Image (cartoon, rainbow, N blue to C red; front, top):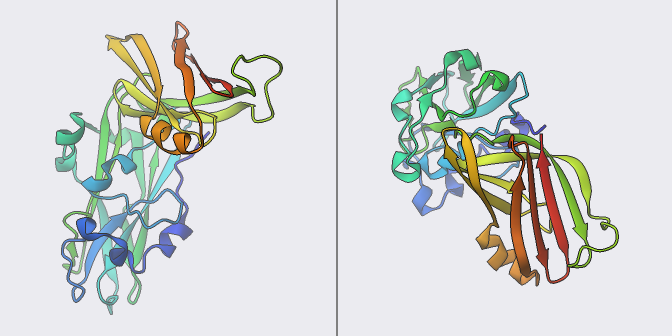
Length: 301
């Protein structure tokens, strides 16, 4: 199963000079290089300079949890920015700010409930940025097997400190959230590809079976999940939810990928994708053909 445990080394690599990596639209507030300020950073371990805090990166703070896991861990950093580190220790407290639960409602139209405190624990809620240093690491334990994945939950995090250091007004919150979606979660994935559009003969060597896949919710009736083909472009799977009865399933492959990377590679979809779903919504079968291939993706519990 995919874990959301974050690695600390990539965080540390991205601390120094973080503000200089932001473009003009992402500039920190305050932006004076002569004053110190703090911002929050949440990175998925890929050593990029994307900070994933603030409303600009709201979607990047979605928690993709596996419902069958008893415990998972979220790691984030409070970073001291400015011209130079402080000459004394700075004690930092991570706090929940439920006043920001629906800060993104103008964009996603989703009302988020506070994540119940029985579903998570701070591993550490206080840390120290040592004199001459620039970061403090925090962790939160969450308990996916106890979570109702049909609810929209939010866990907005910010930070205070004992030195009256101002917090960035646009990167001072991480908007951890879960979008309630009845089919979201962890699945197994079989990918079956034939090297001809008719699907005759035996599947070719790129096929695979039993790999992990996550149905990532984009909204309460839309999920994204990668196909096994080419660059793993996402299916956008949508459905209608009538008081728990799901119907009208549809699947498309990310149009931006189809008209972009796929078109550049000469990949042309000639039929599909079609989607079939079993009666208890545990098996999803997507099929499509290209000019040269026949593809089936099967996702199952």
